[in-house]
Amino acid sequence: MKPAAKTQEAAGKATGSKEGGEESAQAAEGAAVAPDWAKDSFASLVALDGGPAWRALCNAWWEVEAGSRFTAGKALRTKGRPEQVGWWIGRGRARAPTITNVDAFAASWNKWWRSLNPTWRSGEKGGELSREAGGDWDVLRVPGINGMLSVVMSLKWWGDKVNADGVEVGDWARAVDDVLWALGELGGGDVTLSRPAMGPSSAVDA
Picture 1 (cartoon, rainbow, N blue to C red):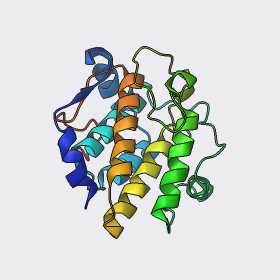
Picture 2 (cartoon, rainbow, N blue to C red; picture 1 turned 90 degrees about the vertical axis):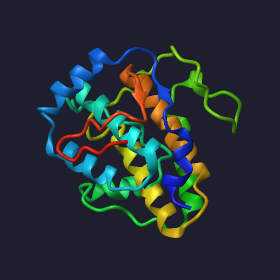
Picture 3 (cartoon, one colour; picture 1 turned 180 degrees about the vertical axis):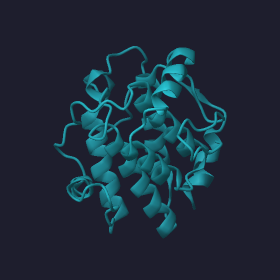
């Protein structure tokens, strides 16, 4: 089953903490100065047939980056990240890594994502991350090529593997849903699954 089939159920939902007019304007302005790494990454992300939630996630990532004018600053923590992320960065982000065991990658990715999130999201060990809006997001407010791109791009590889192997997409779909929610909180906007993509010339309709 493809990710697209699983994520159809999320169509029409909105995520985010407040109205996104100001943030959308900032994103549109930021798009005019988008560097090549952002344009190339967006094109790679939207190439995945991942359904409405995935397209919304691509939109949300672009809007967060464009809202910060693609500023490159600090990097996400590297401790515990899947080895494929380091492999990709070490090769100039030019080639996607090979994922041989999707279950092992999923376990590694989920553990890393949990460790990256603010402590107030921790909840019960092994349980779902909290979605109590209003907490501090500084630990994930990391724009630029060394920031949330690694999270989103590694989700794309996972989705590619799910599509290629035809395996159950539940874990992947839940991960997409949670990252989409977090990006909505980071952007402070209204992230809907029906809004057109915010990317450069490769925009897609959700």
